[in-house]
Length: 263
Image (cartoon, rainbow, N blue to C red):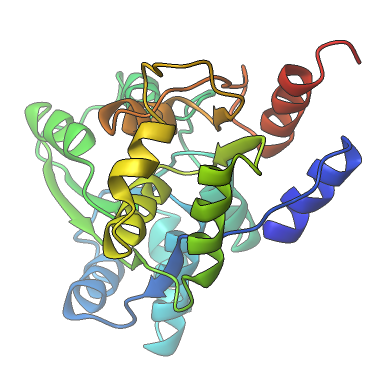
């Protein structure tokens, strides 16, 4: 993803400054994942919600390591399968799994809830592949509609093993050496603040990214879409740029237009 985004930035005349704040941590064959795989195979799950590409792949990987991949695929053919966005949908299609429901852009939880509004969930057992963490809005809504819901995490977002690039980025932000900072997922916000806090730089970073800057600041802060924007607002971070469609290409294009309006 870094190389893809870097290529997009260079294509529009920019210089990439990679500073990863996330590391995917696959949880492996935990008791919860093993239980979910078994229940899918045994027909105890009537609705399966796949929320992310990495999480969907991790679930299929666990099924394969348990020797139950073909059983899971057979079972999914007989239940309602929901994909939250194109990323899990791509994994499902790769596995030749039929997709019954997928929301339109920007693929938020409210969009997903609206997309399955007509689905009868009364008395149904619904399994939700967690979005790297709990999604209380989705699970509570499904429960109110009569479903028994369990949310299973197949991975989580950890801090990067090497935080040196992030600390260098924070220093360059403070020096005014960076023109734009782009957030491409909501977990990045918490991790960035955690790394800054560990280095004693959280307050200065928050001032730089404040929603209501005291002085005009050249730094442009961008969000890839509504889910990320919501988390940024909660953290007190301003949003100068958000593309109409939540895609990486649209994000870079919107940034380029903001930074070079005359081109």
